[in-house]
Length: 230
Image (cartoon, rainbow, N blue to C red):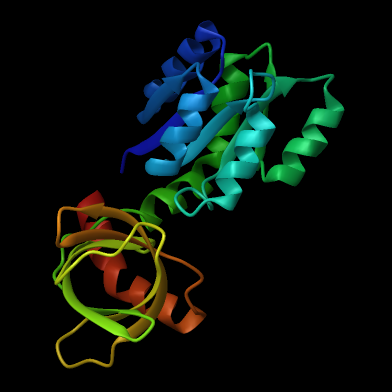
């Protein structure tokens, strides 16, 4: 299962080095030197890990980390902050903003590889959480008093892409009643509309699902996810 990783640093040489190492362990690394562009990409695209340099023109790495943790798309994505070893106050601020790991400059290949090994499990969990499975399940999307019928095009542990009788505005908070099997009692999943395509297709991000619903969704999807990964 290929993990998609975003590397953000205003030094192109740092981006090149990190990408080279990540590519060598079969991670799909996207590099950006413009933090404003990175902010826009993070709001629209899902990544399994993000590397952020602390000291960049605004938004810097700590500000970007805060944006990630406040967003729906990459809220649970592991964050690696890149900084100097002597910048202890930045480490504290980055940790408080939501960073999970730290990579010190000057970057050493062996140190980076050790960090990747340590971060491998959470990165793979995040990749698996958003691994899409093409499976048609009937559903109803409830917004206030309106009920919209539809069917999934693909489904993951973190969200779904659906075809419905109509689309809703991006940002709409909804309740999804998802029928995993014909005739089964539907799961009730809180979600947010994160993408609308045309007049009848939407991307929905699952948010704060209950433990029982999450367990049932995982039991349903995990065999198909593992089969896809083989």
